Length: 87
Length: 403
View 1 (cartoon, rainbow over the protein chains, first blue to last red):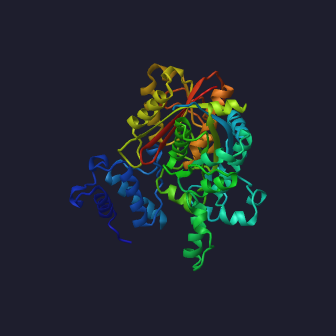
View 2 (cartoon, helix red, strand yellow):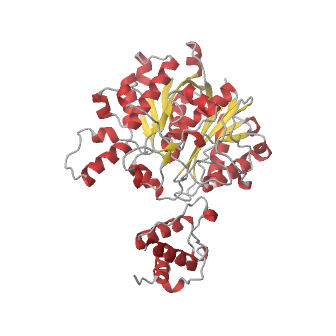
View 3 (cartoon, chains in turn purple, red):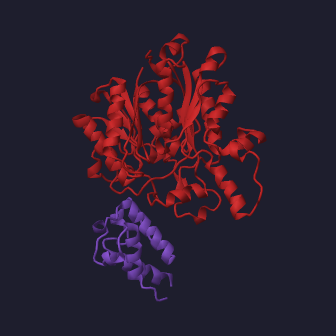
């Protein structure tokens, strides 16, 4: 499978943050993009639906989550890993 | 006309117990009603725990025709209402029957009926459903069946304000008795959404715990759903005294507020206004409150906001009062939760027993109040509050006093 995960993640976040994809870089943190806690739950949902994966995420303990959401790049890398694990 | 309003009957069924006194005993013992969920398709859920009423047999309480009409939330309501009315000793006939009504809270109404029948037509492809699906699932079914069974012909309706439904319902009934519109009312609430669709919907929000409800704890992991009902008889004080009724507690005040800010994130200011409003309505000074039954869902958003609101309203007294979340034991009954939690407030002002917050492991500096960790406490408390803060930013706080 040759999905460009980075681009797809940027598209998902741009869509939910109501931004142009060009304004979402891999270095951005989600709060810089105006993604609040509700939008984050929607981002996770969109990622799961797009890649057919389960993202381990609980809104009550973001620090304890094994899935790194600190930057767009971290999310993309986490998704790459989950997609690879799925095989 | 402003009258004093008292509680003269209480009934409940929930994951902890099958009666109001047994529920209070279970709270005093710090029992936990949360465990593995058991219902069809549970293996497809990512959240598989809840405070379910185990080994509940509808056939033990209702006949076949009744079961065809009563969703589980209605069955729970009828059982709790019978207990409350029996305790009160009231018989609703004559003028009392014409003026007394039922105001109940529920968020989802007959969720199990929706779930079963959607499954039947969508998944199983059936083209016919049972003729009583609509009267079984409607939110007011429980209030209507209580009115029919007990001859309550006065003002009756159902209130739906998500997790504050029961508190809003009790507040409406309280206002009716206090104003002199009626001498007695049946009020409380019920919920039963522990079924595949009900839990699946909640999973989506990513706020549910996989392991336990740990309100105010640094290692909290979210909320846990429960089910059940609690119902009360509330009555004009003079009316209750004249007939020599046993009085459980006085409802001294009630206040509501709306955050007008966010559909899921609570507002500290909205909570503060409801808490301060209940004190003002009850004519109570802040330092008269010895106990608060917290909304205490065990989510980060609620717990921090609620503690900040309490600290702000009570100032230095916030460090002296006790505040606990009994959701750690009976789970979050959503629209029914305020009614079950009122039992903890009654136990505080009547018996001087403060229900604990169980499952507590580690202090959270943002919830630095006396949350009565893990073990109940004895304390003389003359007044207590019960908080409910709903999704949609709708807040309702009840103030109780000992009599």
